[in-house]
Length: 329
Image 1 (spheres, helix red, strand yellow):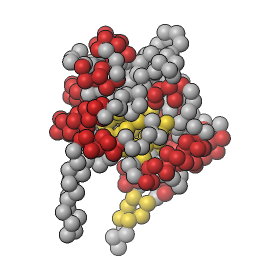
Image 2 (spheres, one colour):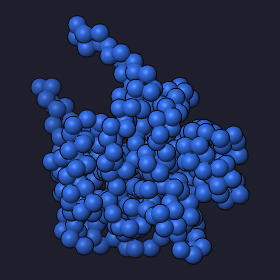
Image 3 (spheres, one colour):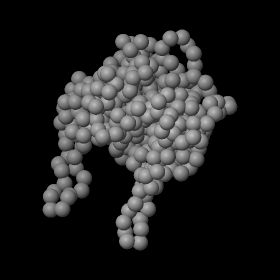
Image 4 (cartoon, helix red, strand yellow):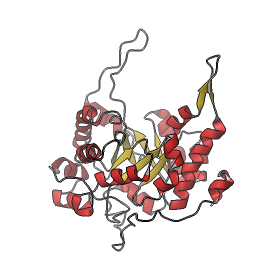
C-alpha cells in the first residue's frame, strides 16, 4: 500500500497474527447489502469507502468569555434543525458523555429525540457517542446500555490501554445471548430512531464485524503511553469497528513546557505515535480513524486513515467536501 512509506521500518516489520484465544468474526454468510443496512457507516466500510462525520452542533451555554455573557442554551429542536442543515456527513458525533454519562445523558436523549422528530433516522444520521473511561466492567455495561437504548449506532471508548479493556467495551454492546452484558430493556426509543420495530432492532443490534449482520460499531481510542505500548494487542482483539489515535490528547502528551514557559511539541514523536496506531490498524485489518482538517485530510487518506470526525462549522464542512471529492463520493 502506498501509505507504508510513511511508517517507520520497525512498524513495517510487525507480524500479522491475531492474539490467541480471541473470538474470530462469525461467518454467517453474506452481510446485508447497502440497501438493507440500518447503519450506513458499515455499508461504507464494506464498500471500501471512507467515512466522514461531524460533531453535533454546540448545545450552547458554558462559560462567559471576557465581558460577554455565556452563549444561550439552545433548545434541542433548534440544535436538531441546525444539524439537519448539513447532509454530507455519514454520522453525527457527540462527545458530551466522556466525563460523566449519567449527568450528560438527559441532554443527549432530548437532542436525539428532537432529531427523530425532525425526520432523522439511524439510516440518515447515525449517532456515535463517547463513553466514560473504562474503570469497572459493571459500570461500563450499565452506561453503554443506557446510551444504546437511545438509538445510537456506535460508542467510542476513550483512553483504552489493554486488550482486556477492549473486551469489556465489546461485551457492553452485545446481548447476553451473544456472550455480552447488555440487558434487555425498553427498546422503544432505540427502535424508533432506527425506524424499525422492536423485534427487528433486537435482532440487528449486535456488534459488527463480529456479527456480519450486526449494525453497531465500537470505536476504540489509544491516547496514553500504556495504550501506545499495547497497541498491537489492542488492535488484535476481533470486533473493533474503528481504532483511533487520540491525536489531540497525544499532542499534549508530547508537548513540554520550558523554563521560559514556552510550550514545545515534539512533532516527530507525536507523529510516530499516530503512525504506530495506523500500523496496528493495517496489521490487523481494522479501519483507522483520524480527526482531520481541510489541510491534512488528503495526506491522512493517502496514509491509510479511512474514518474522519471534524468539528461543527465551516472548517468541518470544508474538510468533508475535500475528503468526499478525493474519495470520488
